[in-house]
Length: 134
Image (cartoon, rainbow, N blue to C red; front, top):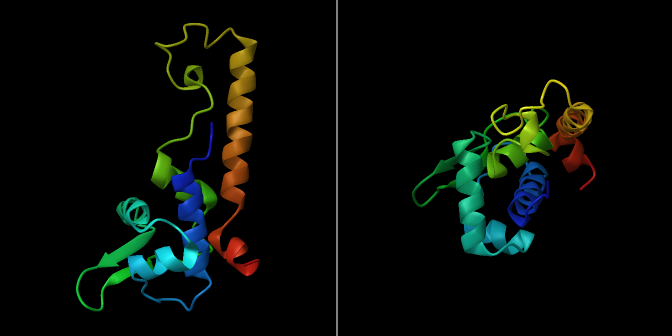
């Protein structure tokens, strides 16, 4: 698994947003400039975050994006899966048709254990924690 640039940008943008007063609306272009993220790329990222209900988007002159949840409930796991989809270290963990040794392979047990620990770590970091250190 590799954290893509899109996930990194999403985390950076959300930390920036979380550092501002609750309910602040951000214009995409201003956010892109403040976070040093390409504007068009950020647009796609923000739409994915809105689809995952981490952000809300409003059209119009006073529109933009704002965080839609309490930042203490948004985890790094939530952000990454909003951008990347479900995390999977190894296909054999989730797909019995891919790996018919699922129930007898000790490597499978190892991959599943590592996957669980990774997900647990990503869920242990909230946006509120990250914003405190910003």
